[in-house]
Length: 66
Image 1 (cartoon, helix red, strand yellow):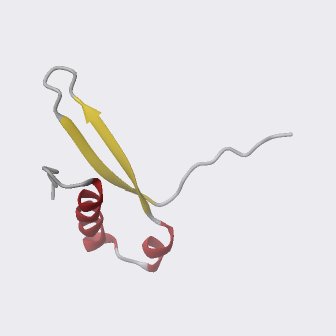
Image 2 (spheres, rainbow, N blue to C red):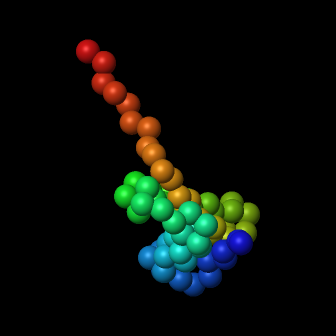
């Protein structure tokens, strides 16, 4: 299911994407460890703005070396 963001606020759009994600991926792991990345793209020709909210389950963090 593709979700099109029209005039929603970021919060409303994020809720739509997250609700759609939970329809197929509901679990205690998702409840405790999942989140969303927001991506915004702007077309250089027509100036159309595309926003998506992509789920993630883990983040890669650098570990400092001594």
